[in-house]
Image 1 (tube, protein in one colour):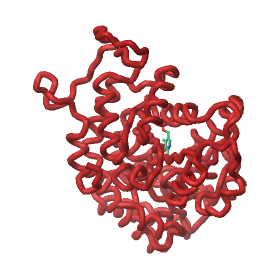
Image 2 (cartoon, protein in one colour; image 1 turned 45 degrees about the horizontal axis):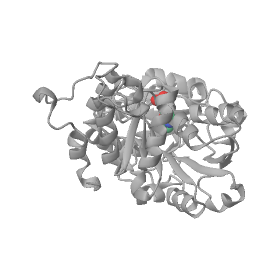
Image 3 (tube, rainbow, N blue to C red; image 1 turned 30 degrees about the vertical axis):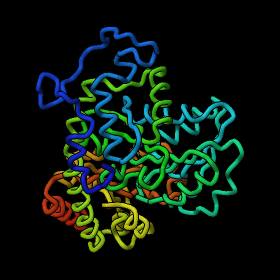
Image 4 (cartoon, rainbow, N blue to C red; image 1 turned 90 degrees about the horizontal axis):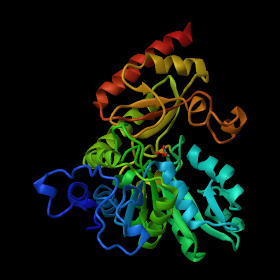
Length: 392
Ligand SMILES: *Cc1c(COP(=O)(O)O)cnc(C)c1O
């Protein structure tokens, strides 16, 4: 069952317990820290919430593996718990990792601030220029790490080249697949060894939990689970229940978000008050050809600039919107909007932001599942309000 055609069915049925618990249609929350001893002879097999082996954990791991067409999957307490535990299960003192130069802020901080203290080195690469990677590899290099769609300019790396490069050099290929979700891209099918997710975003989709996941080769997933058993970053069974429930509608949500984001991006691109629009579904986007070749949809995230490069006007525009909520994070049923200079990229200087193409008036939009027409009407009225102010 690795065909993307049947993902809707796998979201509902893959990994579910048979027989059902007491006939219940939904998997109950196993709110029990500990379980009767059953003769286990290995620490990791003792049944206990922190050891990631309650039915809530196991079912989610199997469902995640099924929807990405991978060997195995596991969940963690947050996206950062999944990412940090995965990296620390692959890298030890003296090792080196190559990473895409534009990363999720938490991952960037972890790699640049925490890994060096553990004697683990890194180099950043331009992920759309495979010819430049060879110069950065060392004999200590153990892995290469990219993001399917990078924040906030929505760039798409040379993903197939990452897989080839890792194979040629016998290193591990890792991709953060949060922005694409398994509906739009399944890394294992391309040959990635491991994908990591913030389930906080599309997988759960309702902005009411934090969670993370690692999906990929069974040996890697087993090692990561064992590290997580030691570090303790286990998903709580109640959060697992909510994630399980949220995932059932993943395909419906993401496909609507794909369609809606494309229409909104096209609307914005034509609007006279809007400057640049970044969306991989637009032909004007530098990674459009790659995204069109590899993805089943272009995702729900887009970013844009008003023609007038003035953060105060950008903020007035955000305030004038009726529906999108001004908040960080993404991937929920409600549309969210943010100015990265004030949220995700606040830690960088203005000059550093500029050098990676993030102006202080850049606006990032996470498309919810509201009616597309209502969102476009809302953008329209808000743009009219700020356009009046611009011309005063
Ligand atoms: C949010 C996010 C993370 C971190 O996930 P948490 O659940 O907040 O820990 C990692 N990668 C990407 C791309 C994200 O958007």
